[in-house]
Image (cartoon, rainbow, N blue to C red):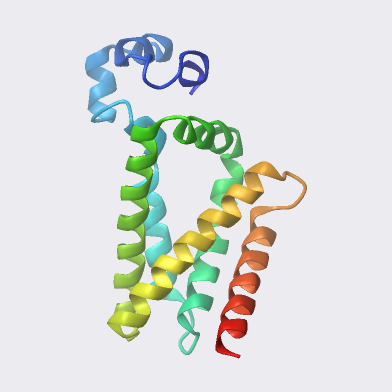
Length: 173
């Protein structure tokens, strides 16, 4: 992360990353397929945690409430990694190729969440819509949390989902 901040993502080589970490390039590539994945490490674990939380949610909850609860469980992990999350978002925002990768990862995450909702009996259409809107709402709350350090991510999630409910109520009324 320090190298990406100092030199920029595009000007940082895997050899420099490996040297800074005190490992060989070969060792680097045992852990990461490319230098982009350094910024997305943990995404698979997050997806597994979220989908497990969706599966384990109490019966009878509406899809967005199931997702909010799953995101709130994951918030503790993210809050513990704030020192990585903050510069990570800045590096991704400054690098078009990383923004594209982030969008692809977000789509995969939403698809996994939709599949978990379908496993709970939510229809295809509702599961897909809830998962994509839910993930965007989560991402929005996380961005606000990074910019505003006064409140925890859990509070930002609750507020963002309340705003989403209010917007949906306005559209329906």
